[in-house]
Image (cartoon, rainbow, N blue to C red; front, top):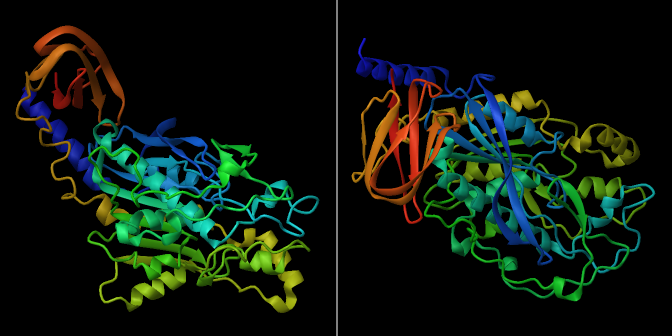
Length: 490
């Protein structure tokens, strides 16, 4: 068999392998995790500059050059939680989807919101943990503003990830977003808050927040640790939060997603008043919720209204300044009434509603069951989400020819093809110092080289440490960059 037939066989086996397995079967691949990748910086609610990071899970041994990308968002009331919390459902989902052949990003985002000026008996020590002193928002606007900041950040992360699609072997047209609790709210906002006229009025410039009394706590998660902030008067300003898409990583890509998975999330009532559901590109929606959720209402209400209203152990209830939200079941009901609803599915678990007549006993039941604010069996959730997304994740037309057709520009020539131990690249942009990287289809860099004094062409040499297969050869100078497909077949 000559080398051309070997190359054709490599392509055929790659594509047959991808199409046969799809992205539903679990544990197809091992995976690596690139931790703490910085995708930007932004000011938090107090004006502090926050470094924004994500963890990137990549399948190992997957030859697909157009893998689906799933961006996951943790929960925590926009106060706590982080991308790498081992107890978080998003970490378990990230591992489950990387094993199915997805590239998965678990994203941190800006946390925190302003507090009330004074609370008579706040939830806190000795009965509640100290962090509960931070549960009292200044007003209903604070939670909407926190949601707005988080969706701006995640959109910036999506653009950053799409901008490096070739490095990660992903298909920008097969991007999905999901999250749990506050992350579910954020995922829905990323998917549907996509027009300037949908911006909530509370996310413009508004009056300063009050100075919180010393009996409350400005504490947030930060980089999977805890940060306590001392508030000064200048930190109380509430400026305009900017455009709905944010300003991070405006690199020519967009933050559109093809599907969204919300686990026990919802939307503020602003979403209905401003008609977030309207848009040219309406993604498919997966909704999970437990019907008796004590944190985020299954239907319509204020977050924490069950736990805060009935199980506060003598503390001042904290839910009154949270906005009224629309939970998963109410969202599904709205979809049912729409003339042209998005494609959606529900994955609901029915449980006994809180019985206020026996509040003491039901508070114990809720305490023993995590307030029914959890994904339940995470294996089932991953299976159901993967099955719902599969037609889109494995759509052969979404990135037609990705990894098969030559991505090089017309001005770029590369030979010989297939190659054995070296290739020469000819491109007018190759002048001065040129950096070369040879990237395998699982995202690993297998060869790196710097060449000085180039004049329109360079040669990349490699040995047997680069096995037969399909590679992306990226080249960059101080003023330009590009890429070309390389087939290695000996």
